[in-house]
Length: 121
Image (cartoon, rainbow, N blue to C red):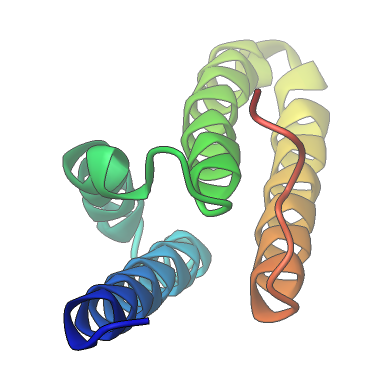
């Protein structure tokens, strides 16, 4: 391996580590959204801005997981909010909150283990 190949490999490793840090940041922002709701918006914006940076890496599955967590969480939150008037919405909101927490924890654990969420091919 020549010097140029070594430098390219080092740059690639650094880029992957930066992308992993961004992925971890997004999980943190999603978790913080239970206390400061606006952080979920920041998280999804980061996901869409940085999505191309993780394309064709094992982190792409985490981005897909995070994006789906946001949109399905928003959907179930809206359904729960609308049906809260008839009482059933509170159960929907509770179940949605547990589901979101599960997805954040599972994603964060798999990220810390260096594992994909699922195959993205």
